[in-house]
Length: 179
Image 1 (cartoon, rainbow, N blue to C red):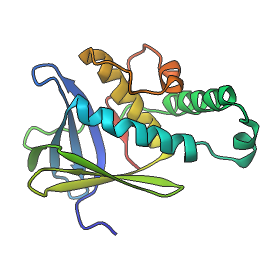
Image 2: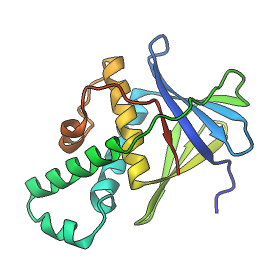
Image 3: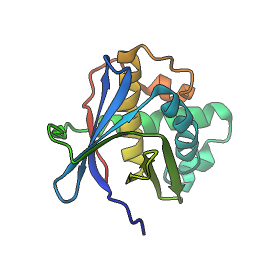
Image 4: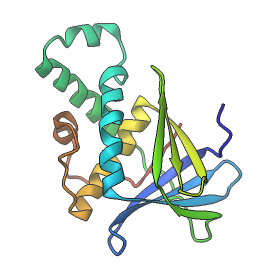
């Protein structure tokens, strides 16, 4: 079990003046934290997260068995991504007017099993918060992040084709439930 606080919800925003993403996170006790992440760190984070989705993010043995070719696997991932995006409902924004803490994320630890990915956002001085994400929540959060890549004019070369194909150029909520 983790010893650091866990985020319950996160509002992800691109902040042009910083050229970074701001993650405003709500803790269970009502406090908020603000985490800043660079494009470089997101680009390192994306491949293991999308790989986990490819390995564990589609439920049902029949669906996985049916995807025997690379094209079938891409189509299955794209469908799962579109389905998760369609299920994304607007949530209240995490208000971080007076955050309990603010820091630049220097590292993200990834711990996973077949059911959940646990991200631990770490500062250089040891501060950390975590968030567990099941496949649908991870897909939803990545869709939000992808939208902000576009707003920031960031290159999307780190994103897999199935994610790119699944993203529609429509407005998406900035807050995704984390459980």
